Structures are given as C-alpha cells and as structure tokens.
Image (cartoon, rainbow, N blue to C red; front, side, top):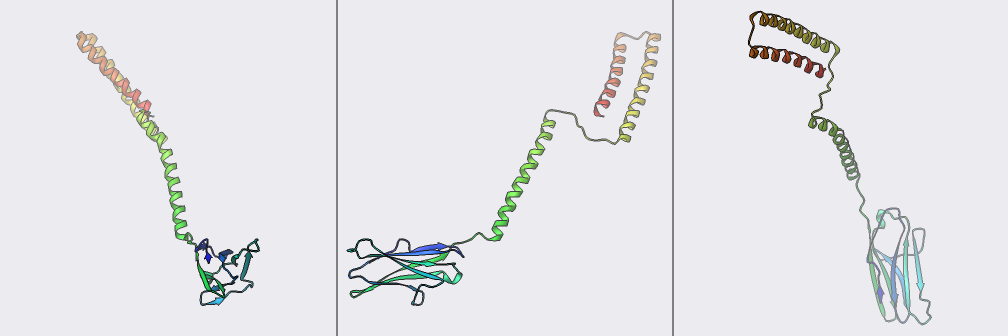
Length: 205
C-alpha cells in the first residue's frame, strides 16, 4: 500500500524540493522512484533518493523521499514511487509544477497605478485651501504688475479729485440757491459713493 501526503506540488525555478511517499508492505518490498518515460532515478548530483524505515522492527512501513536540487524547466512533470515484492507491485504518482510568477508588465502597471494615486492625492490636498478661501469670501490675492497697479491708482485719484471738485461746486450752488434737505441728502450720497469706490479700489490692490 502507498500513501502520498500531497499528489500535486508547486515550486519555483532554482529551488530544491522533496517528494514523499509512505509505503507499507508485507513481505518487505523493493522501493524506487521512476521519472516520466520509465527511467529509474538513482542518487547523483541532481537527485537524492532517501529511504527512512520505521523504528519498529516488526513494522513494514517505509518513507521514501526524493530530493530534487536546483529545479530547471525540464524537471517539472510526473514522478512515480514504486513498491514491489513477491506478491505484486503498487505505485503512486506525484505531479511537480512551476508556481506562476507575476509578470513584468503587471508589476510595472501596479507601480504606475500606485504612483498615480499618490500624485492625485497630493494635488487634491493642495487644492483644498484655495477652495476654502473662496467659500469664506477671502479677497483675491492675484498678482498685478507694479505698472498696472500704479496706473489704476492714478486713475482712481484723478476720478476722486474730479469728484471732489464737482462736490465743491455743487455745495457752493446749494448754498447760493438754498436747495431743500432732500437735494442735500442726494448730494451727500453721491459724495459717499465716490469715497466708497476709492476704498474698494485700495482693497483690490
């Protein structure tokens, strides 16, 4: 009788791997390993056949092992352990396969996606303060060239001087003509609007 702990074993190229068969027979049997094609395996630089009998003298159990060194592509396939005595023959087969590896394309794609996710996260974090400033109604601090700022300031000052001149003329006419309180109130509204315009200009600077 042959008991095989694992009939399908995966390994990587360059590794060492050990195949195991548990044998039990009476009378005692001759045991050996056979590779694909019916070739009997013997111990050499590539293979090592290991037979571990039971510690009990009355037992007919044997553990048969096969060590395969430095796996190459041609080493993957089927390996058969055989037990033969005067009553007959029995065998068990183990399939050895190469474990799948992550391809270079998949590795590069995973790295690219991870890097892209980090970049997007950084950009997203940096844009939060700008959005918060807009929501809070904070002033726009965009840069204006000095020449443009000076031109705008001079234009505002000219308008303010012109407005003050008009205001002086209007007040003089009011005093001469004796306008009503309503007209005077409208005049002061005009004056206040001119100062408010100049103040807004300074804030935008």
